[in-house]
Image 1 (cartoon, helix red, strand yellow):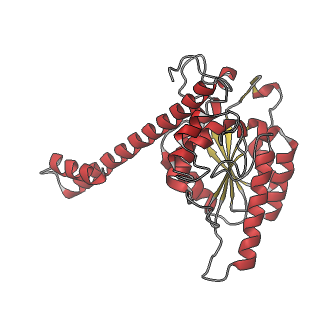
Image 2 (tube, helix red, strand yellow):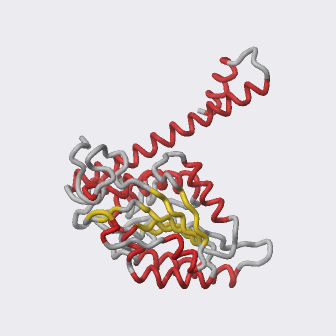
Image 3 (cartoon, one colour):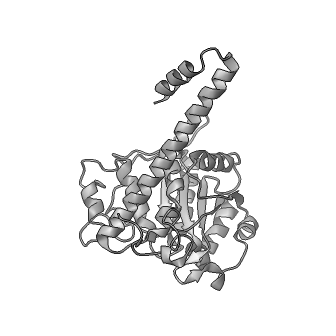
Length: 311
């Protein structure tokens, strides 16, 4: 695709000076990258919608709202091995375990367990939330290839991510030598409003800040919606200030709905630019983004099928 773009750009700019040609080629390549990002995000969303439609149950609000982040993480940011449990792989924890359709979709698209007994195949996606399948309603460790830890109770996955970051720090201290970083992986976590309302996440966050676990990067899906309505029914604190008090590096993505993977890559680069604090990236998102008027941005988007989608 890139070679074809360069060829077309050269043909269309004959006679232009070199500087102008270079700019036009770069712009065309960027346009193609953005188009691919958008196509990927739509694919992720509709794959999740198909799963929930087939099962007649599940949660689509977070998979739709966080599809751009998932596309960037698996497509551009994380290092992983789909076929085996590579010991130095980056870890991803879905603290908001009810959004499992998003995780299963990404594991399928990246070929996790392909051909093995725990293959996240299309057939397994069709059995989403069915007894005996490897795609249960909430992620289960050892049941699905690529699932790092069982999550479901809100806040539990956040605490597990802190524990994994502690393990990484211990492995580094024990085995790494100058010039030989045997262990250098990062732990990524996706948490929602419900996760941060729970006391367990506060305790774990305090410990992470105290231990300066800089290899931990948490993305906070700040969509201001719960199953009962808006979060201000019970939750109005300044999350950024709270985590800053815990000793965290606090970053912001003002528009977490963008499909541009560069936005999420930049946030991760900024998180990795320091080595003394864990990072929380507060993403302002719209729950059910892309589902259309009357659903996106409302409590209706939290769970169940989207009635206006012909999945």
